[in-house]
Length: 446
Image (cartoon, rainbow, N blue to C red; front, side, top):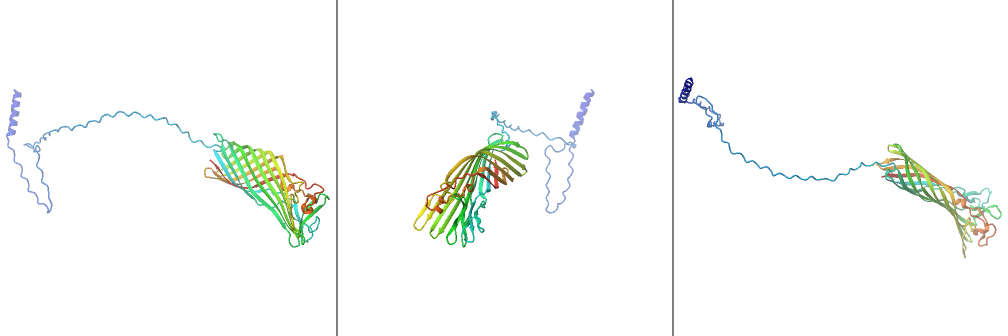
């Protein structure tokens, strides 16, 4: 019963509230005047559902219809998997191997300015200023030519080396070297003038006495005498190189190989005599050759500190020196009516003319020292000194026999047949030889 009464009371109250009239809206105040030139917007009327319910209650806006869902973008078709590309295995590149003590290859170019040993020359011309013929022991007789080695200038040349390593570690190598010195001439010259006289000294093979063959004398004959010497040196060697030590500041190599050395020398005596009855010219030539072949051993030390270095090389070769002596002479006698040629001169006669050869044991050592600095990664510029020595050699001045048989000398005997001792003799005297001097070079190791 209580429940029924409660429902009836709720319905009554609800109905009474719905039957009440809606109170009028309060009037809006008039708009205030705006400043000149300004405009304001009017408010929009409220949308449906935004007005309050009677009694000032607010209700929610009606639900808006939900539009159809946007069409879903279709997913792309599945992409078939790409087959994996199998790459060939990459070969590992080994790191660059550092060079060995010798390097893969090297070359050396040197400019040489060397002084070959001056050839010995016996006394050749004596003269006087009194006009009298020169004679041994005479107070004013003096030596004019010969009796000493001729003054000489240095010979220019070059030395060239090529080498390469023969093993992977670059501790063994082969190298070849060639060098030469240009031909150099020197000599002395004598010519009479005024009251001077001169002649050639000799020992008479018949009497054994020392005499002088007069070539020039005032009022009798005028003469010109010249003596000229020449020398040319060249050689080559092929060596095996083995590194013995390679420290930070020192490298030491052993050398084993073969050496060839050739020394050619010449001495020419030329005399021309003019007299009232005609002219005479004599030529004597003494030529020598030394050709050495032999095996050699050596050591090479390289001391370096930063960019500077010092190299020292010592080698010695043992072998045979093939020696050749060749003497030749000629004479021309001319008068107003005749001209006579002869195959002998003054110091070269049929008794000693021709070629003589012999082979002897010899030793050829060589020493070199260089000072220089490094240029770039592989170059080295240097200056130094070098000397080569030959223990046994034939020299042209040693082959002159000054013992003459006057009957063999056309200048004395004319065309008369020879008589008496068979002199001068064919000599084969030996001495030694050396050449030494300055070097300037550039070495490159690749």
